[in-house]
Length: 318
Image (cartoon, rainbow, N blue to C red; front, side, top):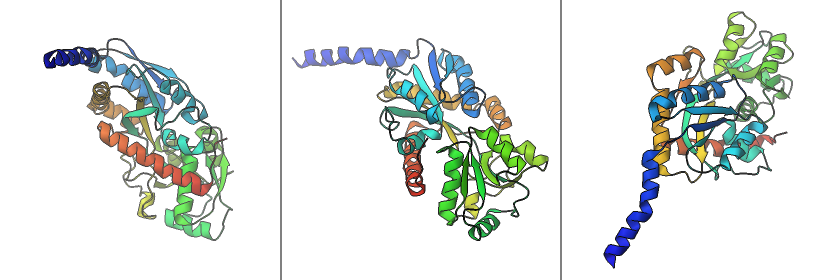
């Protein structure tokens, strides 16, 4: 009887085991919750282009932008948990649970992290007319003018909006939010002097800084950016402040652990290859790609952090 039960257990386990060992046997669909041409899209295509070599099957990128990433997120959350449909999304994934009250899926329960792919260091840039040169000077200046300094963001509940509100909360200042439909229009008005401040990527602001149209005050991340090592972090003036703008790849919840491990290993191998690291550095991106446990813990911590900021600043998506 015991032998029969053992044999049955082996037979039941065999299909799952063989699936994991064979994975992948067909191309993988990478649903990108962003439009073409941006950092999330570019990173996704780098992954897709190298999957053939690392896993023996190609990746096919499909752009599904909109609703702060929720359109792409819902599509993948409702897909089979077999590793063949993946989601790539920005830090907005960690904001969705608290900023969007009527989501049809749970970013926390219906999706599981494969890896945080890269960090995209953001900097706080100012119009030259704003008479400050550092974060300490900005805070002192803003304290005397509560609500008088206009700042741009790429949209309500966007990473740039949340990064600025987090700074305001942690330094006890009040700034006036002007949301735009994307980073580009915000930077245009910042250069024109219609607003005074904005968080944006190093790559999208460096040219304007070099021309004297904008000035960098600090970088937002937990550490100084590799692309601007002389630029201090905001945390050096406001202890505890750190906003790393990251892009991650996720799979439907319930995907087999062995499949998740193969995907995680492939992403890490691709992003830490020397030629890929150079390509990423040229567009201001820094590879992360840690193991499954660290990726999961980091994103859970980010969801909790942004829930506190959203509640404190009374932010809701529009």
